[in-house]
Image (tube, rainbow, N blue to C red):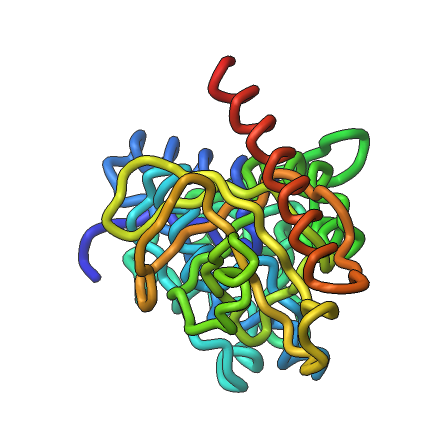
Length: 302
C-alpha cells in the first residue's frame, strides 16, 4: 500500500454514534492531507481471544463494512485477523507496523481505545508515538446520548431487553441484518402470510424474541419495502428451539430463495408468545400487519 492513509482504529461493532464521530474525523483529516480515509478493524472482537470470553456481535463483519460505506462514504475497510501474534505484539511495535504496512500518515481512535500486548497501548501513548514517528493523531472524546455514554456494550443490553428505539438512538441508525433468504417451513403461506426466512450469523447477538416492524431492501431492487418480522423460536408451531427470523413483506409476492435481503429493525411491537392454535396466531398476524401498515403510512405522510 503506497498511497497515504488516515486510519480510524477500533472494532466498530454496530457502527454507533461514537464510531460515527471517529469516522467523520478520519474523513475530515484525509481531505486535509490528500489521503485515503480507511477503517482498520478486526475479524473477531479482541476480548474473545484476550479474555477467552466470546462477545456477541451487534453486527456481522459484512454489515459493519456496509454501514461504514453507506453512512460515511469510506470504501476501504481493512479487517485484520486478530490472532495470537497480533494480540502479543507490543503496543509501540503495533503503531510502527500500522504506519509501514498501510502507509498511515494520521491515526484516529476513541477515548477508550486500548491495543498491544496486555492492552498496554492507550490514547496518550498513541499520541506520543505518532508524534515520534511524524504522524498526526486525534483522540475522540466520549459521545453521549440520552444522558449516557454511547457504547457497544450498552447497545447489546438494550437489544436483548427489547428496547429497540433506545438502541437505535445510540446507534444513530436502525439495527440491521443482512442474509440470504433460506428455505423455511412454508407455514406462513398456509396462514395467508407467506414469509421469508433469515438467520443471524454465528456469533451475532439475537435481539429480544418478538415481533418487529421492519423495513427491507431486496437484492436487485432500489425501493424499500415494509415487513412484519418475527425473531424467535415460533413456539405455537415448533418445538425445535431454533431461532429464526421470519418476515412477512407487505404487498409482495414472489420467490426470493437465495436472494440477499438487507433488513432494518424499526420498532419492537410485542414479545413472542405461544398461541392456543394456528387460528389465534393467524388473527394476531393480521393485527401485527395492520400496526406495521399504520407506521408505514405515517412515515410516508411525513
